[in-house]
Length: 305
Image (cartoon, one colour):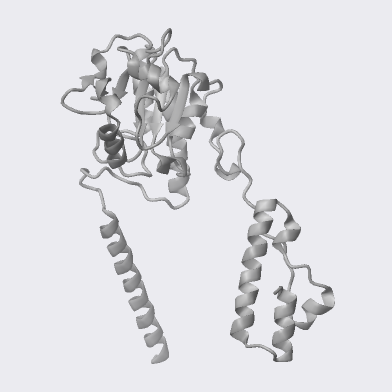
């Protein structure tokens, strides 16, 4: 049943208001979804003749257009960060493999998309999944079978990055720098469930400072985002310190834009200033209650003045 039919039946008293409201809502949702999928504005709005809309006091309006997106940084043009991206992607000799948890793909503020904008995409590959073993991907198989490959994951057996030779990994063979992308619990699960990764040299970062990914909580003050981790590894292997600033600059700009538009600055969980979600929610509820109490007091004072 369309909007016309629903309103006409209601006007003639042949159905209840609740029924017609339900029909109206269902019709609106279906046409809106169809319009978005098909890309046709006519599918996202009801075509009403002027006399009918005047009869029921309905004002026709166009479907709300989606925000214009930048084709390069893939962000709304109002918060575009292309000016902070390198003029040309960094040419690197190392091969980088990002093993990405599926949940990270849908995150609008993830760092891997920025990474692929900053380095030569022919040297940086993203493979998605929750478990990575031999036979999953040819390029991963080559990396797993090479003695020169490394995987970034902390632990007792992990080598410090600064102990590795300063030369590209995978410049002339199938070796690669393997980095797991996800939350700490997701990364730990991927590493433990992917037995083949256990045969690859583990490497960990030390003395690199705190993360500038300030819109997401890090487990410790020494934890870095995927982009920052890759930046420090490449800077060491490629003997080019400028890589760190070149890759982190757009991340810094993205975080600044988000905070300027209302996002909360996050601290690592071991930071004294860290506020958990429960504590933050409690503070917000307390603040709201205090504001409501003040408003009631002001209203009462005004009434009995």
